[in-house]
Length: 235
View 1 (cartoon, rainbow, N blue to C red):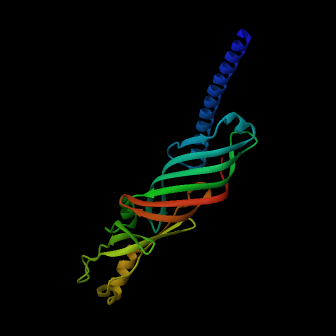
View 2: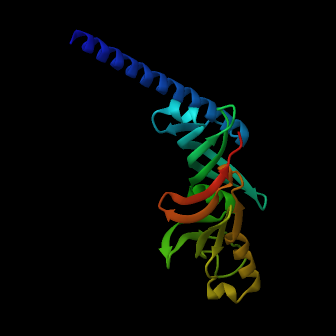
View 3: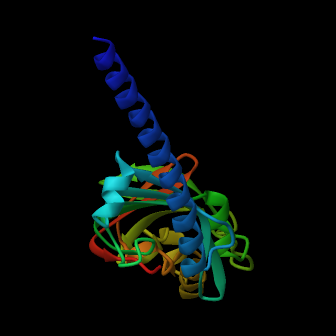
């Protein structure tokens, strides 16, 4: 009986040591992965990386991780001479394959991501004194309220239009749904409004070249989801 108790104690001790060692190893791997993602993506800050699944050591031995989550912070993209800032960017990679050195991430069977952009950043990116705010949804389309900054044209100084935000590939598009009749009658007015309400931005720094697939307007900004399969990951 005493020998059995000693044996059980040894098993428990080794089990505890294995768990501690496993957690230390996963912490080290998360730090390395974060540094490599930062350098490969040219990020100003080191992202937060979380490796899911237990035990980690058996996953690393098979060069395959169940899931790797990354909080990448913000990023910026330029178009038409203006910069659009993404406030938050996160990604989740599933069934991740490691390189032969066991430290580099080669690919993921599937991945999802999410980007958040505030209305303040959309307003700044539109430029020219344009204001963009929340307008809910209509007929399944995510909408925003756009207030152009039009001067020198009678009756349209306080013009306000509703615009729709759509995504395709790595592109975010903002377009006014309809120009008010009083403005459509004047070619100069319609052209001036469109120049301030219609914009296209490319989010070409998405991790693994994920494709944008849905945008939702919320009271604090727009939320854009992305996904991909057989995703190649640098570093």
